[in-house]
Image (cartoon, rainbow, N blue to C red; front, side, top):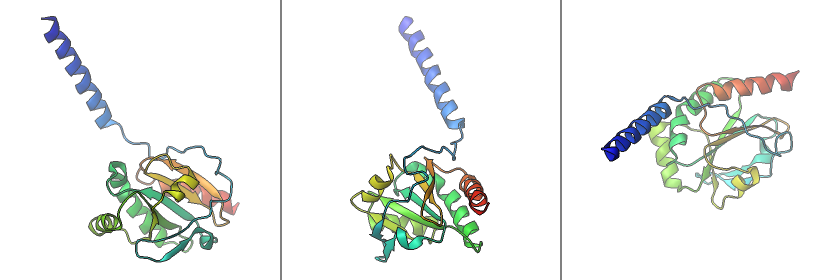
Amino acid sequence: MRIRALAATTALVVVGLLVVLALVEPPGDATGESPLLGAPAPAVESTTIDDADFSLERRKGSWVVLNFFNSTCVPCIAEHPALMAFAAREASRTDGAELYTIVNDDADDAVRDFFVRRGGDWPKVRDDDGTIAVAFGVARVPETWVIDPAGFVRLRVLGELGSGALEERLDELRAAWSS
C-alpha cells in the first residue's frame, strides 16, 4: 500500500513539474555579465562555411550581432524564427546590424542543411577549434553578443532569444549610442 501511495505521489509531482516546465516561457533577454562588456571586442579571424574570409575588425562602423549556434541545439532551433525576423528587420534599415552565426562544434554540411531547410542567408562563421567561443567566454549555445560600430562589446544574451527581444535591446543600444 505504501509503495503504491509513494509511487502515485511521485508520479503526480513529476507530472506537475513537467506541466510547469512546459508552460514557462523562455526569457529571451537573460543578459549576462562579462568582463568584455564595454571593452573592445576580441580579435576574430576565421572563414565562413562558404570559405569567405571573416574579420571582426573589418566590421567596425556597423552594429554587429554574433549568435553562437549548433544545428542540433534545441534552443538554437527554437530561437531561429526570432533570428529570421531580426535579420529581416535589420535588412530593411539603412543602419541595419550585421548578423553572423558563429558555428560551435558542428559540420559545415549540417549547418548548410539547417539553413536551407529553415532559411537565413546571413554568413555562418567557422569556429572549428573553439577559439572564438573561448575569446568571448561562451558558456553554451545559444549565446548572442552585440558589438557597437566602434568595436566595443555592448550586450551578452544568454540562452534562447525570445521574439522581439534582440530588436528591443538593440534599439535601446542605438538610442544610447546616438545621444
